[in-house]
Each structure stands twice: as structure tokens, then as C-alpha cells.
Image (cartoon, rainbow, N blue to C red; front, side):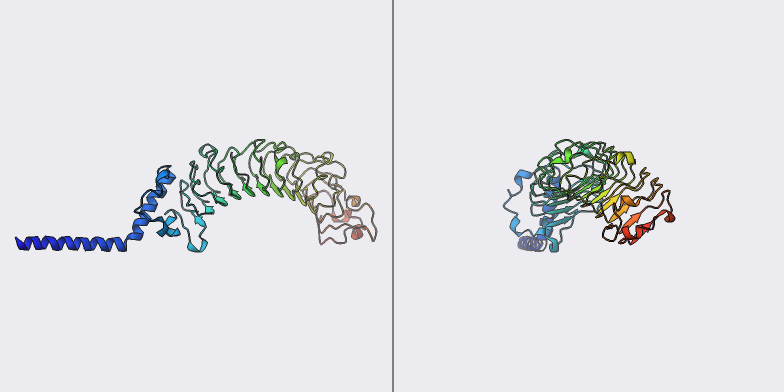
Length: 368
């Protein structure tokens, strides 16, 4: 009997010893597992009010790698970044509070549940491009609670509507390569910091005066849409405007008048004719590059002597009019053109008058 009692005591002691060993050697695994469960709960909208309710888990002892969702990577060298890209994810994981940069591109994400970013108000950069996002599966307020968000990448998705509730803090917005057909009149209300806007390759037909309230916008990309006219009331600080591959047939007379910062204008692959170009509309000294290639021009439009790059290839131009480049041709008056492309028109190199040597003396590349 004494032997049996003694053996039982030894077994109990051994079990206790094993439990102690397990608790010391596997504490990290336990915390990782608990954190994983917590992240899953957050991603499904459960347990937010109980995040710090259990005294048995000392959150101060949990290092930042353990706060990272198991689906992602949070390297210690980049303590504010969370890399979840190219992992075949179908949902957005819960984002820890210290994270500022989230990379979720190249996944299979179709929607964003409400609240998934609520714990990370300092988010500055969200990359969700190249997924399968649908407008019907994105909450209208998903980005509204991010007052510090500056860059949002939603291109290469299946969005059919312009996202609602975008924060006014945005500086860089990418919505290109979607199926957006219209932009609400108040879409950019209060976005005084937005500097670059990418809306290329959508199905937009008209923007009205939607862009008027963007005082800081410097780059606007609207290539590959269904625009029939240049958007009205473009911002005064606009420097780069890309309108290729649309259905534009004319240019407003005051197009460049009130935009002294506009340097690069690209209107290739449209339906512009000479009748749709008012006299001297491009004769503006601030313009540096003008692309009118692949249109229906029969004459060279008048340009400023300050222009440096002019692209007119693949039109129907029949005559090389030197007055389009220099109103007066002499040793003191000449064009600053460096690049002139007029290939794939109806003129030949011998059609260029000899006076062009003086007018275009700075040119380094002329293609006819």
C-alpha cells in the first residue's frame, strides 16, 4: 500500500515538472496561438470589446512580430509595415494598431469588411491593387475612419463605382483599371491635399466640374476612358494631364489660359481635327510637351517657341508650315523644339523648307 501511494506522489511530481517545462518553453507558441485566434475574431467582427480583458495575458510582453497576423509578415526592420501581398488571401486580416503601411496586393480579396482597419488609425499607406474587389462588398465607411491615410492603391480590381467616404487626407489615389463609369459630384470634397489622381482605363464618359475642388492636384491620368471632351474647370496647379485613348474631338479655347503650371499634355489616340483646335490655344509659353499623335489633323497647329517636345505622328498632315513654329524666322527668333515627330503623315523630308534650319536650330530629333 505504501509503495502505491509513493508511486502516485512521484507521478504527480513528474506531471507538475512537465507542466512547468511546457509553460516555460512554449510560452511564445501559446501567445502566437492566442494572437492568431484574436486576429481571426477581429477579421470576423467578434470580440473587439474584450481585447484587453484577460489579465492572464500580459500584452506589454508581446513583441511586434507576435502582433502580426499569421497570414502576413511584419519584419522587425520595418516595424510599421505589414506585408500580406501575393499570399492567395481571400480576406483582409486584422491590422495591429502600430501599423502604418499595409501591403495586400496580388491576392484574391473580393471585399473589405467594416471595422478591419479601425484599430489602426495611423494607417498612411494601403495597397489593395490587383485583387478582385467588388464595389458591392466594400463598406461605405471602411476608409472614413483613417484620418492619416495618404496613399490608397485600388487599381486592377472589379470596382464599378467610385468608393465613398474617402478621407480628406489622401495625397495619392489609384483607381485605374477598374469598371468605374461615373464619378459623383462630391467625390473629392475637402481633398485639398490630393496631388495625384489615376483614373485611367475605366468607362468614364464625363467628369463635369468634379475636379474643380482639388487645389493641390498636379497629375491627372484619364487615359483609356470614354471622354468626349476635356474635363471642365481643371485645377490651376495641374502640371501633367494624360487624356490618350478617349473620344475627344475638340479643345476648349481657354484650355491652357488659367493653368500656368501645366507642362505636359497628352491627347494622342483621340478624334481631334483642326476645326476643333482654336487659334493659338497651344501657343502658351509654359507648355513643354504636347502629344497630338494619332488624331485627324491636316495642318500643324500653332505652338509656342517655348515648347520642347511635339508629337504629331500618324495624322493626315499634308504641309510643313514653318509659321506654326516661328512667326518670324531670323537669327534672333527660333523655336526651342528638341523633338518633333511627324512620321506617318502625308509629307516628306524634302517638303521641309530650308529656313527650318534657323527656326528649328535646337532640334535634336526630327522624324518625317
